[in-house]
Image (cartoon, rainbow over all chains, first blue to last red):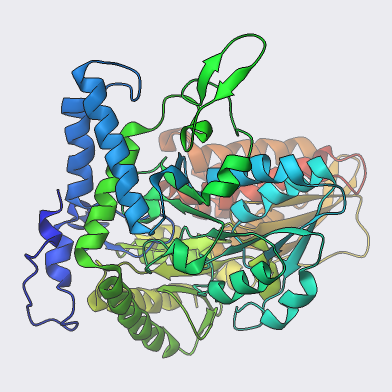
Length: 422
Length: 148
């Protein structure tokens, strides 16, 4: 399943001896194409990453050989589908070092995971005047579910400010946590700025006051080793498609004691043990939160993506991506017209930037004409844009299959943009 | 894909030096245009006398296509009757999205420059935002109506 990643990586002489990027690129069929007459440089990984052949194959094998509904039938295909689906859950448990696979809930993605916690954990226990603490650098998916919850319960939202580098103002945290705080929900790595937040310190601060903590790990999962027991986070959310797996599948991790205390999020099949018209008996974890037939092939694909990431190793991935970040930062900073937005001391391989006199959308179109895919816009983080007084930025985000040559191509295309519009 | 089809000299010029780019002291109608996907914001101000647009100006921020399109629009519709302005919107809309053979480029004059957007479907909204905002301003009963 993950042949490319086991022990076949030749130690070829590359700029990064630790990781043979050419061998890795061969695992990603989509990368080998021309876009607008140029080799594709896919630098929009923070929006969605590409799938290695092993993920594509795992999904296809399942569709061609094993598909049936899970946990339902006594027949052979249903058993195979269930084994593959639950096998993927066990891989994901190991990937984030959860204590039990019962703490791994399949969801559609990070957005649904946060909505689940807001509506199940939050709605069942929040009282008027209670508080949820988030931060200025949250993705809309870690803002709006809490606003909905606040409207429903009379709770209030408190926001940790950020500084000009795009780092959390940690000094403000103690003043924002109170005896009314029921949850701290923060992003681990910012999609708009690349900031890696000191989540362990935040968790310790919150736990000292008995406040549970949720982490939005959508960007962190593909970039850094996550150990939910070492972090001691109470909830953690991630998305398959940002970690080289399929879309429409994601994970909510929750501590067993919390998940057990929470009411179901949705009702239906799978999440019950018995139903009659007086009452229903809910299923055990994690099925209590998995109403309806799930995204079986997505879960299997995500399991294959985890295998692929483990085959390379998150530590090597982090080192290589950090070297790309440093290279790209130096390259882009050399352009006098360019300004990097988000200069945290601890950053993942995401660079948001603006160019004097060229609107981000024009940049996006112009670099696309040279085969380079970057994101432009507000990155679903309007409060971040407002903080920096910008309507939008351009953003390049790098994966371990990106190269220094692609960063050079980006820099060259940005010069083209200056030539066209100034 | 030819960038010069999109970023023609006239577009670059109108982006760099947008015409009628101001908030007037007096106006009869206005409307706000907002594209929440990209953050483009436009305000269009009209002076209308006997169903004729006697003055038009705009303010806001956006990409080169959106600013140039708005600038070209103000030049094109100043002095037109309301119905003529709406008819011109129809022609522009066809030029941006419709069958290119059905478009009469002569009717468009300088506005023909923005028809290069046709090859860039993700940018059509940038070019049409100002026209939708103008239509809303023409429909507006008072100065406070917004398109969103």
